[in-house]
Image (tube, rainbow, N blue to C red; front, side, top):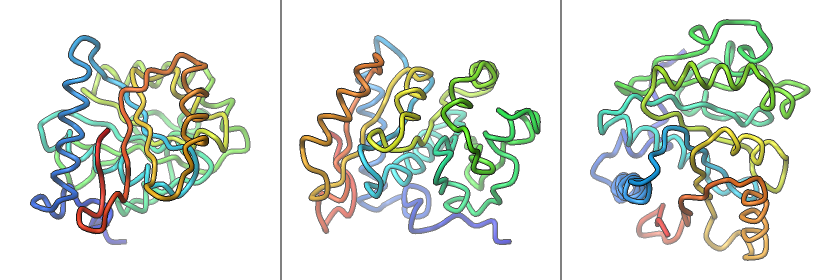
Amino acid sequence: MSRSTNKRAIAAYKYPHSAEAEAFRKLRTNIELNSVQQPLQTLMVTSSEPGEGKSTVAANLAVTYALAGQRVALIDANLRKPVLHRTFAQLNGWGLVSVLNGQCALKDAIYDTEIDQLKLIPSGPVPHNPTDLILSNVMRSALAELKERFDLILFDSPPVLTFPDAQILSMHCDGVILVVRSGKLKQPAAAKAKRDLEHVNARIVGAVLNHFSNRSKGLIHL
């Protein structure tokens, strides 16, 4: 199996001088500026509905923080339709689900990537009870252990309006980034996703308008 990352998906690493890479660096800077008073160690990236590019945003944002020298754990918490193992050309054997089910130790579910300072925890096998796993005490214990090892823990979550997982996961996080694909999502859906997150006291630190123009091919931080 190739261990090379997906060049197209990880523009922040493979094409550091591209418009996409610069957009992610600006996004990181904006997040840091907005969290001076309340630092973020756990950050969740989500969207209202599928297909808005949240996993790509999560992966590139994680890479951008790692390239800036921070120790980053990127966790695929989309336990129903995981994709990050493919983005980083990894097998999806042991992962978050394996840890939460007691099938392996946390250290065995942490994978190296070709980016220094960036580790990946894939989802692991798709479970029948993802919501229960995210709510579990094992999840809290695993997160506490990760906080001892990493400067930033970044979650890719399921879409907010599809499953309750994102709302529950947001309660474990210091902040949430909401990704919206330009021209795809109607304003009422985005507003409902925001309300659903705020209902559980999630701290929404920003929004990303994805695929805003053909010229930048990517990303604008609002």
